[in-house]
Length: 303
Image 1 (cartoon, rainbow, N blue to C red):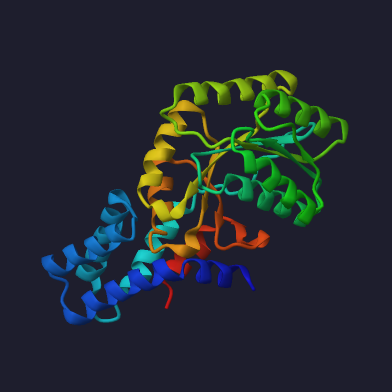
Image 2: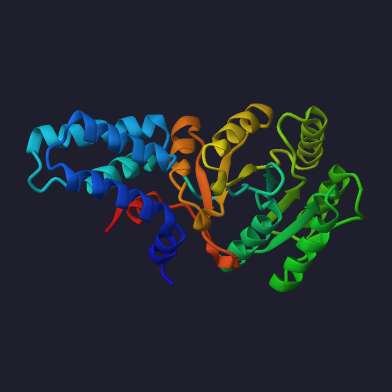
């Protein structure tokens, strides 16, 4: 399946809801009235595109209508162009450390899919013909270590792990040592799920980052927050708070294939200015894809 087909299939629910609503509004009233403009606004907000993006799209629709009338006015095309323009500055590439392994810390609240995402990132790096290690630093959740080891076996990727309840920072330390000794290109650290409001858990994450930073200056090179796309705008609050607690370098949005709230990707990027690095569009290892603004906008609005 090509990249656009993946985006299209993964965003099918959001696309169906959005295009159905917009077509219904436009078909009912050929003239753009204050009432129909308000309905367009509601449809965009319902897809979790956020207030700022919604205002930008409705202003563009109004401008297009005033300058060319309804003849040949492509509402979906206008919306698509505005989203593409808004996301055009998004830098999806993973950073690469100039020397030694690139250390990527995967953070987020419980249940967003961090462990699976860490494994899928390892698969992505393998597909780029680079070497990778995984570190099982979620020592709170009993099944997390086993889950990551299962993925490691499946992908033939080594997992650095310790016992359940072990000190996560010492596991991270061992993983950085191993990655450096083996001249590994990337090390992905699967951290424990934590609420940004739990001060002690956030302190533990700071400690983990401090330990690997002492061992390998500049590490972690990326701190990626994993968000569950099906939580819609609630994910924006998580991103906002996490970014205050731990300086984030980017976002990964998972589970977009099961929701009609895919617009939240745009809302979060627009408000926080943090790049969307990857989006999860299904269960398979290669269903985690680098974010592409053009493909994303087309998958949301293209007929």
